[in-house]
Amino acid sequence: MSLEAPVVDKKRFESDQQVRWCPGCGDYAILSSMLKVFAEMGVDREKVAVVSGIGCAARFPYYVNTYGFHTIHGRAPAIATGLKVSRPDLHVWVVGGDGDILSIGGNHFLHALRRNVTLKILCFDNRIYGLTKGQTSPTSEVGKMTKTTPMGSLDRPVNPISLALAAEATFVARTADTWGNHFREVMLRAAAHEGSAFVQILQNCVVFNEDSWESVVGREQREENALFLEHGQPLRFGRNKEKGIRLKGSEPEVVTVGEGGVTEADLAVHDEKDEALAYLLSRLDLPRFPMPVGIFHRIEGLVPLETGVARQREEAIKKKGKGDVMKLIQSGDLWTVKG
Image 1 (cartoon, one colour):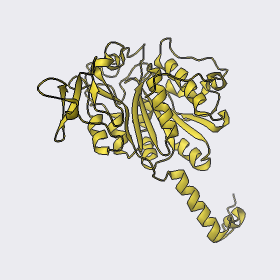
Image 2 (image 1 turned 30 degrees about the vertical axis):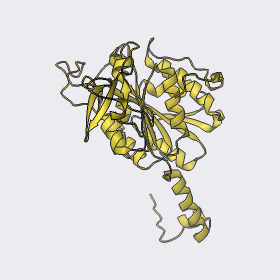
Image 3 (image 1 turned 90 degrees about the vertical axis):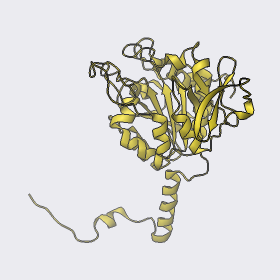
Image 4 (image 1 turned 90 degrees about the horizontal axis):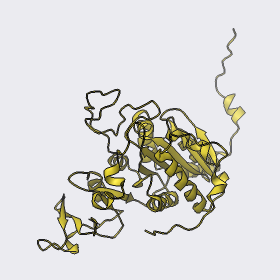
């Protein structure tokens, strides 16, 4: 991945609304990076639409000068699906938090992915309900003490990457709010993808769950604890890239290159097209393994839902003509209801 971002004019995508998030919130970094991504995509503002649900992340459409739709809790993927099918020319982005997308919106999230609608679903994951003042979310860790779990959460957290892969998403990735260049590279790849794309964004909530991802995102920790995925490259990590992931059959293990006869040739090589490997990587986590970040899986060439719908519509018109709505309404048995 390139480390230098080109100079782009992001101001044309800035709205005139005052940005209202808590000082220090990771949403500010995400907004700043996304404005650059929109500008670098090289499309008109009128060709971009941002759809959100409810929560802190859902304010996003107000702060970008594009078309936007602030929907109801969890339903953003469903609304966005209708928008993309009716206007396939638009670049449609879905924005929501881990609660909005993975809890009340879990059903819509799964079906938007399996239908392969060309939506870019961004999950701002801070592992907490922020807008409602700090309750456990679907991604909160076991033992998390909050207002709703004063003795610690007993729920096993959802793994967003594993869930997206199981739902047949054709593009699945993970990045972090403050990783400007890495964030940009992942989002531009997602933007160019034809089909469903899901990106988990590790994000900080300074008020209710500060430094939740610090062990991975922190400047000092990420070299040791983050495994940056690159297609065609061996799975290496560590301050000097001295560590790696080796597979013993289907079992991963951490090894040190140069010790015990281990060479780079012994390490697993990342392949974005390998779904089984992507799922295996999605299960890696601290403290036993580093956390993988980057693009886990990508499939090209599958027909997106909006393309299939357009083809069916064209075929129906060829066979039966454009039709007459009023004639259809007035056909068949008619009933008159009088009060």
